[in-house]
Image (tube, rainbow, N blue to C red; front, side, top):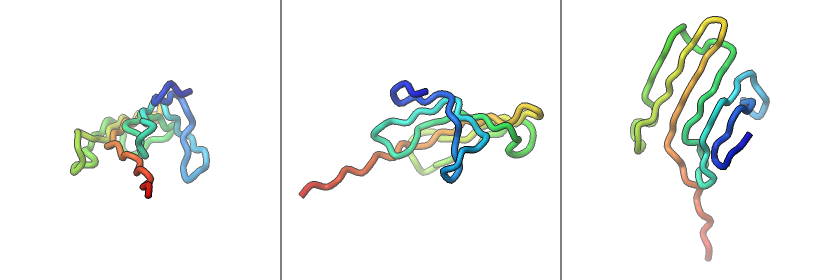
Length: 93
């Protein structure tokens, strides 16, 4: 479901094919090539059990990170932020 730039509850894809992960919520501005943040769930664990946090895109503006929680029998929850990447405007001659 989409509400403006907000996407809710959508199956995720890997290399163009549906995968088991579910996008719970994401923000993707129409003027940006990249999403700004997303929150997802995967039925499998993605690493060791428990919480994790790491900074990403350190040389970009803002505080960007990837954090999550791996829980046995439930799966992995993940939230990630990244800088917006504005679409390049076509040059007019």
